[in-house]
Length: 495
Image (cartoon, rainbow, N blue to C red; front, side, top):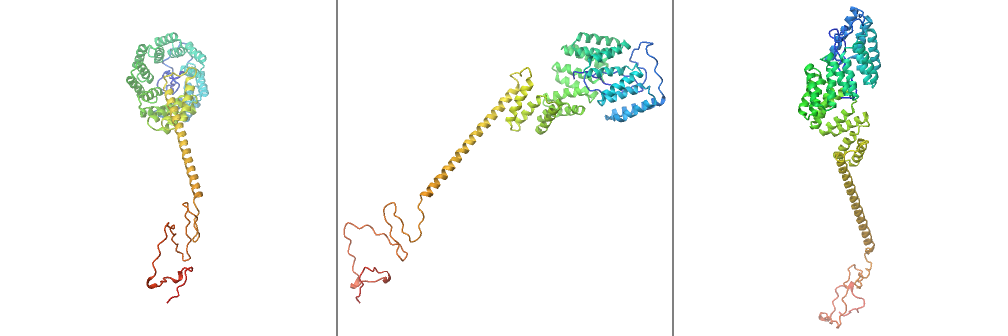
């Protein structure tokens, strides 16, 4: 429930006169038409109101056609407000004394958010027909919703001066006193309303809320069940029973009462809100998504509904959709601290972005705490510590990786330096025919003969004289290779 009171408005039809219902929440809808005749629910002081001027038959016919169009559009759940406006204005062209047409134009204008135009139509209706109490009621409720409580009280009191036995205005005055915290005055006015109209569910609802405010659950349930017996088609009464059961810890029974409210009226937002919350608590994320979508159909700018839809998506593993809903919630309400918490959880647990998650956890703690710090047992502190530990571990791992890389680069550099030094120390290769430098052992290599065959280096001379070679056979020296004879030897000229 929102903190401002509202009403469910009814168009006037040619059949019945229906009273307004105080719903206790901000959405206002025309739910049914009534007739341009005397209001049978109002006790009027005799002689104080002049007889209403007769309405032309043409105006009545056009008015009835407009009401039928309204009923058809209501059944189809698709309203064409410009078309309805034209039809009611056409009826007024036939007879400007048709106050009910002005009232219905006010209802249509208010549904479209045209509050100034709605006020003007309600006032015009009252100028034509001061006994049209519903117009005064709607004006008073509009003032109350706008925060002008004093103006609303003045209008209700004006109705009571005209109609001293009016129950509805007393019941609405009772709601104002309840909201101000004056429960004694609220209960007094509610009982006075019920004395004048025992079937006033408006007064019963005020009593139910007052008992709930004071945690008197047994009395609240007693009054709520009485209300359901009086009007089982009122979704707010079923919803009230659900709230009481929920406070008693009977979640399953409460769920049934909320569902009953939706059976009565499937677009009753408070019950969708309650069922969505119960579904989230039981981790029924698809069920929560269904109710949250219905809430957003009625009010697409509901930041909390977008936030909870994001939670439902997260529960189903649809993380990107969840982040989109969090973004939308933040656009609609930048002060909604829970957006930071839920966004941080996905960044921490799913997106591997603990650094950003730490920032958002801290932002949530600062915003959610406000003037009063969060409890030390709040789960957000555990999540923050966990994310900070991950950040530190990643930082240490990165530092270790950088050190390992530096060591690897240093080893590569040292190996390159060693290889370069070895290349500088190695002897350069010699071309063929060039004497080889002395080896490290001190032995001088022999020069290569002209024939290209390397001569074997002679062994060191022995300590004893070498044996005399044997003389050639037959006293002759055999020349094996004249071309290679030692020039120091004498030629053998013997034949």
